[in-house]
Image (cartoon, rainbow, N blue to C red; front, side, top):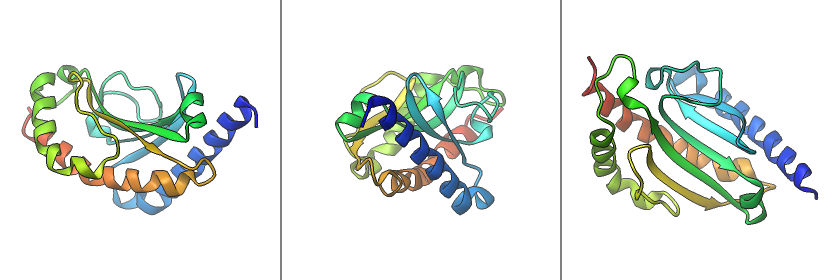
Length: 169
């Protein structure tokens, strides 16, 4: 299989994962699943409209909090997928008064008891990347590998909502 074939297969799988996520959760959940291609890799994101100033129909964020899973050509060759929770330009987030470092510290403090449930996780970043990790995937069974992590993030979304509520103007 060529590099192009692999990336196309992953992109098709990510579209299917988004479709199935939307079928299961979209009607009962504020989390929006976005799927696309960004910086030479397939990406899935979960985000609430209240967590960003950006349009929800674009894959790239300039502000806000989001969970993303991505597969690059290199990680595909290693049977790995990457994930993170990002917090971009929180000071500019409309409706909130947020100091990025303070938010990151409080998030990590509250996240620590859940840390063991997240594979190969690191929290050793500045305030933009709250957590980041990777997990092993079978490229022929991406949905089975990825959907459970997306479902796990749904529980983390409640923590983010609580932390934001404390900072609402």
